Image (cartoon, rainbow, N blue to C red; front, side, top):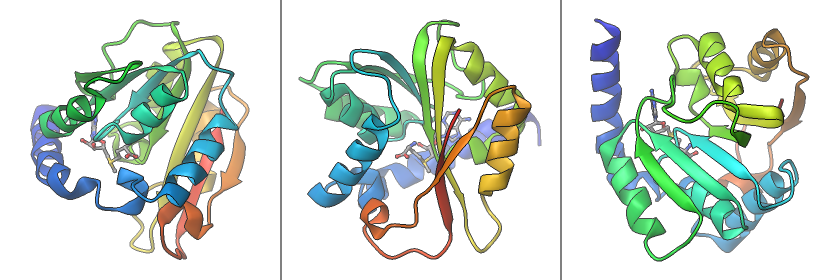
Length: 199
Ligand SMILES: C[S@@+](CC[C@H](N)C(=O)[O-])C[C@H]1O[C@@H](n2cnc3c(N)ncnc32)[C@H](O)[C@@H]1O
């Protein structure tokens, strides 16, 4: 498999997932309590609006639009045309968010121009997370922030909190870990590892 084959495979997989993606409570944020939990969590780690945010691997744009509705200017990037199509449909008539179909491991965004890079459940899938993280940091203005939401299931897929903290610290940044075990974020009880790292 070449890296190009890997990208094609990921694109096809996520295109298939797109139609039902928002049915998960934490994806679609259709339940007001789940939506409010994410809004409060993210606003609590962001600079005041307005600020410029890159949402990398944005899926159907739910978090991008949550943040745009809170007054931020958000550029969402996703590999999957179907995800981007759904994000653009949700954004119609709303201000503050635009979406780009591209590989988030090397986002086609202007360097040193974002106050925040947000990424939920995508860093773990990057072929070289350390190199990817460095490219994401390059997007940030000097006092910009990384907001990474990741996790690891019992099948071993994903990144542990220790791994993500090590990646962020290895990139020369201070990492602040917040664990997210509360059902409020997921719409159900969970017993695997889920967390946010602010870098
Ligand atoms: C688990 S979903 C998370 C979506 C969104 N961040 C959220 O939390 O709702 C993973 C997303 O990453 C996207 N993705 C996977 N690999 C990617 C890559 N190399 N570049 C851009 N997006 C990618 C998929 O298309 C999918 O939309």
